[in-house]
Length: 74
Image (cartoon, rainbow, N blue to C red):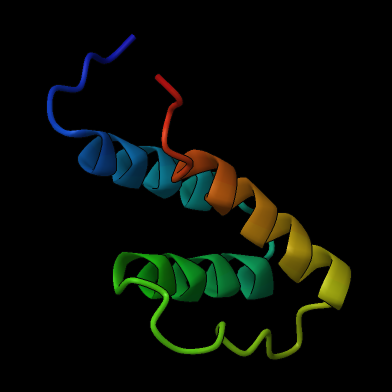
């Protein structure tokens, strides 16, 4: 297993990249990349357009990415 050192945001970004790399659907992978960029920019505007991706698939990507970037409770 790979050990990653750094702040929680860096580690979450690494895990998000692993998740995106595991997606097979091109449309879902593109949406995940767009959503990652949205999250990293601070969610200042409304969420990204899902394009050809179904609402259910887009929601699944958002939920997974939100779980990855969730702050651990102390």
